[in-house]
Length: 82
Image (cartoon, rainbow, N blue to C red):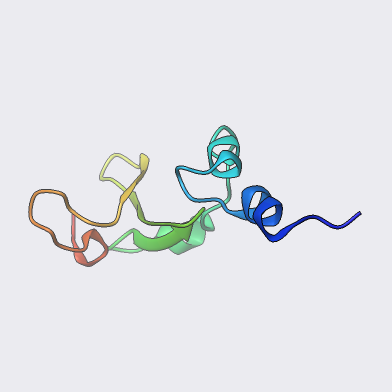
């Protein structure tokens, strides 16, 4: 049984406002390898489920994931430092 283009889009789109995107955000998603967040600038831009994000490790070794665009300054957080 084939599905229509609309049904296919409904099932395969993973943006934040889509049914599949909302479902996928309920589960852990691999974003990077630990080795990719080492060194003196533990920061990595990632695209995950249709969103541009920045993955980082802080001075205490905790990991974080934020939207890539800074809402206050309008800059790209992937170019930042801690």
